[in-house]
Image 1 (cartoon, rainbow over the protein chains, first blue to last red):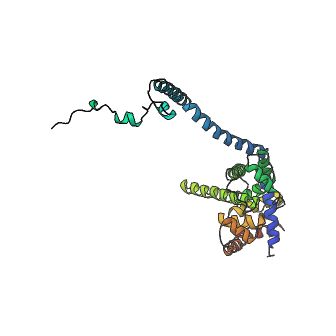
Image 2: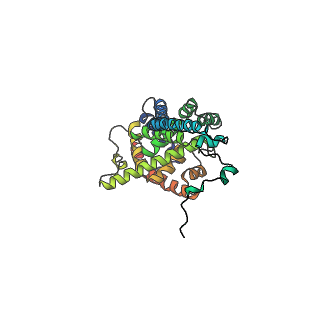
Image 3: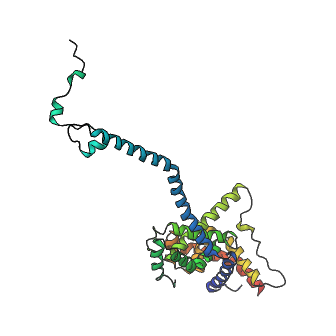
Length: 114
Length: 187
């Protein structure tokens, strides 16, 4: 029985895989791959678009409420005796200084029981 | 490996989202990937899908590919791993349904009395490859079909070089046992 050399075996394997790989590939492989990659990219975009679409009404309502709140607190801050800081205006905080701290109205606290 | 050096600019551009650069990489390597997958799966309609999956996996891991290996080697590794997954899944399925393994669906190598043409020879080789164990098949594909060296094959399969050599020796002996008698009858 003649011995089959490595070279002969390699040639046979090469020939077989070359033919089978060509016959197994359908046309326009590169185009199909690129189309699938574009679909992948688009599915990411769709996800973020869907997220924005779902939360858009909530975000718009939140912005509107915040603006109303800031306008209201700014309007109220005009009545303060002491000029408030911007943070106090925005958050509607009572401006505090030493005089107002010491002249606190103690009547609002209930009398201590014996 | 003719494109090894010039792959780098295309890789850089593809990482920055240039799809034309990625298209060029696909064009360059699609046939070698198809050869690897065909070697692993044989004459199979799944080859086209697997080749697509290999390139999509490559695209998804472009940022992780640091260039330690060449583009071709990296793609070959993905192709081999994906093919091994499919072969394992088929084996599991064949055990589940107690049916014959897909690989064994190839006909037994037989020689007709008339002509033993090129088509018969291809069928014979495919039948012989399909009878190899998947990890033996991977070594045959890398060493004898894709032309990688033993050390490169060892790196791709993440095994020792000695293991590559022993698997190669066993696999080639097995292939010879199947192919030689038929080809000698032909001659």
